[in-house]
Length: 264
Ligand SMILES: [Zn+2]
Image (cartoon, rainbow, N blue to C red; front, side, top):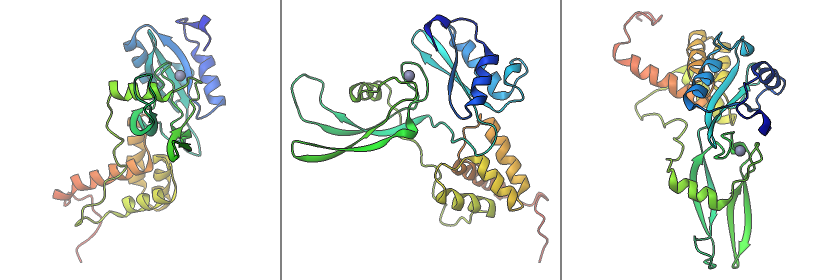
C-alpha cells in the first residue's frame, strides 16, 4: 500500500475485488490506528458479516497485525478449489549466529521459531518459501535456511535472532499426536491421516471432501464447521485431530443412540 493512503478510509470494494482476482494471495486491506478496531473488522470479514458487504458472500480470511504505529488489516480470498494452505502462526528455521560483537567469532547455526508475520508490516513471511542453503566457512560445510517475504521486507539473520530472543515461541506442535497404543482410529480419522501422509500441505477442506466421497457426510459437515470456526486456518491433519478428539470425548458414553450399529 502506498504511503498516501496511510490511515485513509479503506476501500473495501477495491480490496475485495483485488483479492478475488488473486485468490490465495494476502493483501494489505488497510491501516488502523486502533488495534481493537482492526481486529474487529478482521473478525467481521472472516465471518462473512453483513457489516462489510464488499466481502459477501464470504470466502475471505482476515487478520490484524502490528505495522509500525498502526494495526494492519490483511485479507485473502480462499473460496473454491483447490484449497489454499492455511497460514501457520509459527515457522522454525535455521539461521546463522555470528555473535553480537564486531569481532569475528565464526558462525554457529541456530534453530529458532519465529512468527510467520513480518515484524515490519504484519504481512505473511515467506514461510512456504523456506529453502536450505549450504555454504562453506572455515573449511566446514554448513546448512541454514533462506526465504524471501512476499511483502519485500528483508529478514536478516541478526534481526531474526533478536526477534526469537525477545519473543520466545515454542516450536510448532506436531500436527497429530501419535495414536495411543490401545486406540483404534475411526475410519474417517484413518482416511484423513493416510491421505495427509501422501499429500503434503493438505487442507481440512480436502479432508472434508474426502470424507464425503467415502460416505461420511456428517463428519464432513463437522469438519467444515470447524474450518469456519478457525477462519479457514485448518490443515487436514488438524481435521483428523479434531475428529479423533471428538471420538475420544464420545467414548465413555457411546450408547446415546447415535450409533446405527445393532447388536449382533
Ligand atoms: Zn513486511
